[in-house]
Amino acid sequence: MNYQPVNEPITVDCLFKNPGILPKAFVWRNRAYQVTNINGQWQRREGKFLVYCFAVSDAHSNTYEIEFNTKDMRWRLIKVAFE
Image (cartoon, rainbow, N blue to C red; front, side):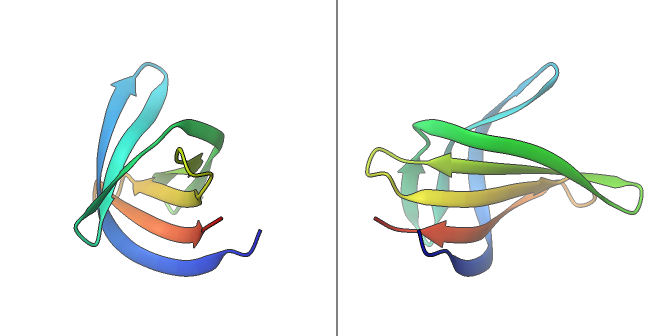
């Protein structure tokens, strides 16, 4: 799969569930994407702040890497790969 960098802000519908976050859908460039599968999740640090990272896919097997940064409490679409 060939990933293309995006690094743009997105709006995410998610559940904050102890002990983590579950993204359900997101809006990118005025288009809604339904998350059908969380393929992977990990965390990394940026100084004292935590960044929650997710590899997710939709019903069309497109894959996206999204992040939630606790420094500014914002989501970003990092990479995308379309089938």
